Length: 71
Image (cartoon, rainbow, N blue to C red; front, side, top):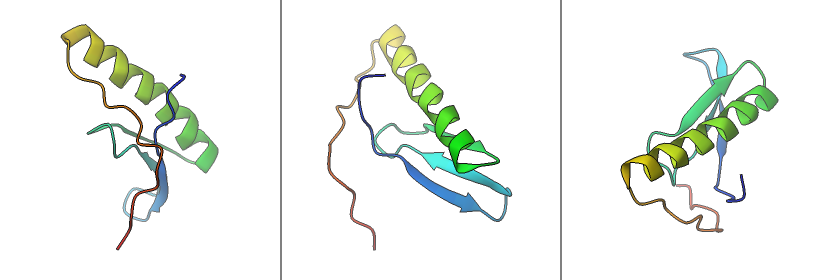
């Protein structure tokens, strides 16, 4: 994976797993029992998201390269 999308990693008390979310790719997220596992899974999810977008001719957002602002 050459593109570097921002990944937000957090613990979910509800699911009892770490969640890795990619805000720039709608719906792209993964989970794991450890932060490392969630990151591994989300990297695969990013590639699948991009491959699916290419297959259907959907636009693929370019990584913004900036941090999001949290309120």
